[in-house]
Image 1 (spheres, helix red, strand yellow):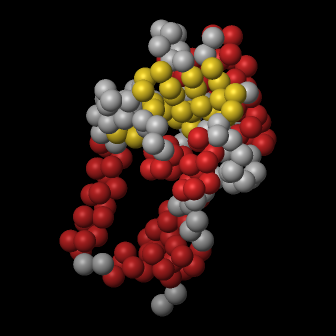
Image 2 (cartoon, one colour):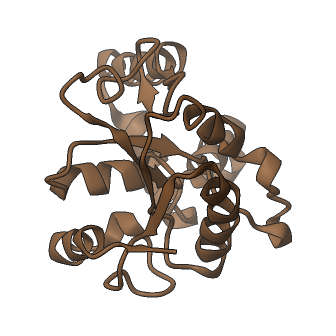
Length: 200
């Protein structure tokens, strides 16, 4: 029996194809795997997705994912509150947090400025970042956007807004390849990039 004659199967594979890195063949394999799961396991799988969507939301301070009002990083009193690392997404935060010896704060932009994709500055969490700088406690922000054209443009845009506030603005040093994503960088390259950051 061809899967193309089964509307529920087609719907399932279409939804699975929406996941990053999943093509038609992978989606079909995953769909067959789900169909062959014991019913209890399928229910647990479905419940895990539903609960994650219901219980996990953005931290009201940094924008990281959390199941509380404030994430574990923002509520950690042992962190350097005068230093904020600005990243594009949660994956970049986790990549830096994993290897950095600096216990700093973070701010997630939820993307980068990309006119070609219709993403303008007002669609990012830039206003929220500027609001965090208003009390004078933050002395430096590290712009850790990816080394892409969009990432560089976003870093420059934020730098122009922040510098007049008297806050030091630094950028990750060389080491991250141009066009590369932070989450795929090896630990040594990423560590050098953080330690060798420079003012822009």
